[in-house]
Image: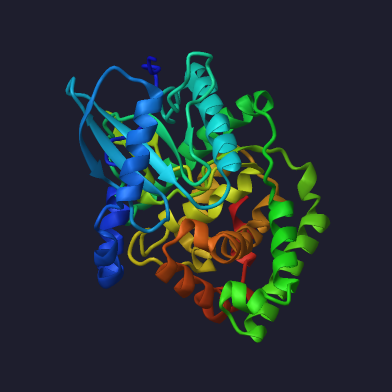
Length: 382
């Protein structure tokens, strides 16, 4: 069985976030350094089922060690390398769906200036993506190709403007291919409704490891978010493929001769969605912030109104116009992020120690900060 030679994934997968984790949580990180034999066995079983004639001669773990997924670089006997991702939390069927949609995106983008930017998952002879699954764990393979340059931790205003234009161009390309993609099973509304139901359970305090008053705060914010979806007509907004987690360790750029740059490659697709484009902007505000993207593993809404992010929005809107209603929805994007990815699915995406910390911080810090956020500067970006 042969792989598709058009597949791509940058080789330094997760390296920056792994180093950040080591600095921010050194003791917890040290406890995770030893590679799980179970995950290595999953890689070996997946490779045997894939039936590639080459042999694996060495396996290096390159996981970020922040999420629950494990990522490995495979060194093959012909001198080439490949990447494998192994997961065991959540739903295999949603994992398969996300990778199927991602693979379609990569192929449809071949006719645009973003050809090769996204990884294609290795496929079976019938054209469907290959996944290994034993009802407990699942795995996929990607090609391993070099990444280009990383943006600096703190961007200049010119770099912020450049990034705003690049993301707008990428969103335009994704808007063009969106009609060719099947809808996703997950939606923002269904996720929020599910969280509301979990918070109303008599076992909520045990399940989230939070006291009743904290559960009440989370319920209030989830209910408010659902009301906002109705008031803005969110269901009618166009939906496109989104990558959401635009931290600096997840993408690379290629420097242009004129001194600018263009998006070159993107990896780490844990938070892939098919939703309105506004969901991409919270992490982009972190990349654009005056403090930079990777100083600490913490989440706050203040980056949405920093002058540098306002400059990002102005540049973005000059290429791909946004309605004021979309822009003013951005604080709700932050609310959804902390409620869904930190609270509801925190155990899926973060190590147990980080999940506990972030859930507590959501109630004590993140959501109270959102309550006091003055979002009026967003009006100045039109």
